[in-house]
Length: 83
Image 1 (cartoon, rainbow, N blue to C red):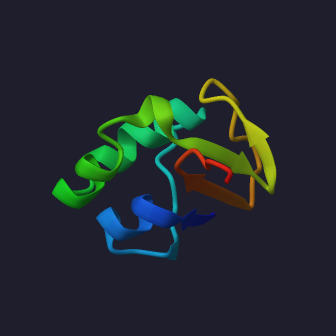
Image 2: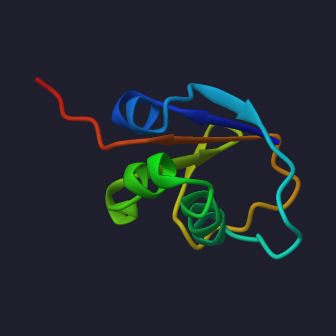
């Protein structure tokens, strides 16, 4: 599965994109975020305020209780403000 990180999520993790194999126990976006936080202090810091991070599965916005299923791509980005 391809994970994409944007804006300050990318800056804090130090990663723009990566391919990962998720543990079988990860079935939802919330579980994915919890797993990502265990991958090191940079990920823990990036997802410290997970409730404000937006998520898209295969380019469709979803809530954190969404099932990952057979997703090919999951993107994480902070809220966007207009101007």
